[in-house]
Picture 1 (cartoon, one colour):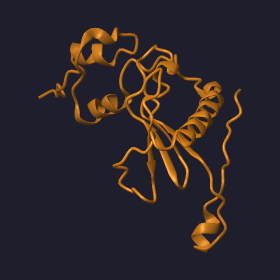
Picture 2 (tube, one colour; picture 1 turned 180 degrees about the vertical axis):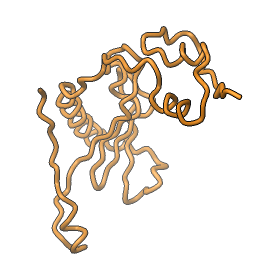
Picture 3 (spheres, one colour; picture 1 turned 120 degrees about the vertical axis):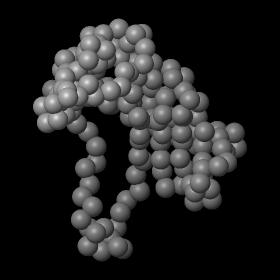
Amino acid sequence: MARISGDHRSLVPLIERAGAPWAERTLFTHVGRWAKGSAPGLAKFKNCSVREPRWHLVSTDGGVAPAWQLFEVKADPGEQTDVAGQNPDVVKRLAANYDVWWKDVQPMLVNEQAVGPRLNPFAEHYWKQFGGEPTPAQLRTMDPTRDLSEGAVPTGKNKKT
């Protein structure tokens, strides 16, 4: 089993004393969504970021390749001005850190090919509580083995009267 990495620091010192020492660190985020059945690397740079106290490197529109934007957090807290072009060394350094992080988390993506339940558990509990049952369209939508090219998710509760 893969070992979970991270700094795992307790927030208790900060809660107990606002001036407690707190070393700066780099935070990485990734939305963690990609097409069902596809390789995570195809969305490596989709909705991800690297954040330090001064800098925030963001790629919202990337995929296999990054679409980096860089923001200076303290000078531009609303992140309105992309300064990547003026700070290529910062972009290069933070992007390299992201690559190391991405490689480190790959062994933890253990459920990527997991097949979910036949019925959505929340919908199943709803029907048990309020009556009704899934429509054939809802059953197709909830089928974890379905072809995702089928289209939009149908709505409706199909409540028994």
